[in-house]
Length: 315
Ligand SMILES: Nc1ncnc2c1ncn2[C@@H]1O[C@H](COP(=O)(O)OP(=O)(O)O)[C@@H](O)[C@H]1O
Ligand SMILES: [Mg+2]
Image 1 (cartoon, rainbow, N blue to C red):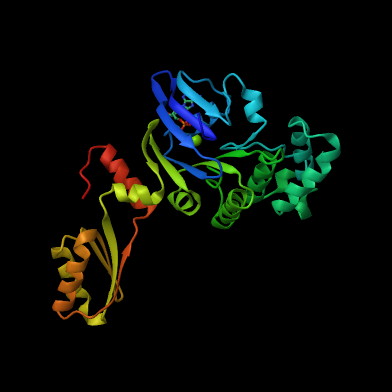
Image 2 (cartoon, rainbow, N blue to C red):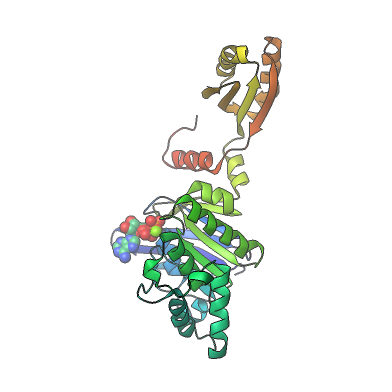
């Protein structure tokens, strides 16, 4: 098996619930892999399986070339995990929290202080390192938990909804850290999220999960192509022309047409129909200043995949 994470038909039940249902995927070294899905999709269960803290009911998996089930400690020595609700020791300072963990991770005593200082610096916590963690804001607590997960310099980092409880400013700081860990430090990141913007921003590839099953896997662009090449268009016209342009777009098959100031936004036009549409607009005397096909966002893709999986006909 090649790949930092490889699973084949990985399955885990809780009673009647199939939390993870025959999951087969490969995560390559250095990528930010998005594991996308609503609550209950099986994201957290998968992370726990991959770290050997939960046993599988079926299938096979390897993490960093080893079995998390039979070789759990060896796997966990090289992986870092930020759980959904990380618990910090609130009565200890940030520095003390990190020092306790550095000991647990088995970092050699003479190196602990330096390593703790390094992560405090890296996560912008150095100035307040000697305050109790309980006094920290949510964002600072999350940075501290992330720092803790990185103390032993893991090659592979699991982040389970790292920004779910954060305000936008704190979330952005976490995004920047993830980008840095991947781009500058070459670490592999397995990112569970239900936040599509986050996935779009950060992930090289994404898996879309629902009820334990993987519905799709690929780069955001690949998933977009699977949707049949329907473009979203932005069309800027002369101020008086928006009404006529909207009518033309509708008769060309646009499913949604929205007008904002001088710009029309349309969905559902086939890419091949774009040149003909442009010709029709011009022939009708409409002054077109700009026509831009927009790649489908991960959000479009996500909802289309869900609709397809639930048997709805994509419009
Ligand atoms: N320890 C558990 N006991 C019973 N059911 C569980 C347990 N953990 C998860 N589940 C169930 O498994 C499914 C997947 O849960 P989870 O992996 O937490 O999804 P996610 O992280 O995507 O929200 C859900 O239906 C959840 O209720
Ligand atoms: Mg979860």
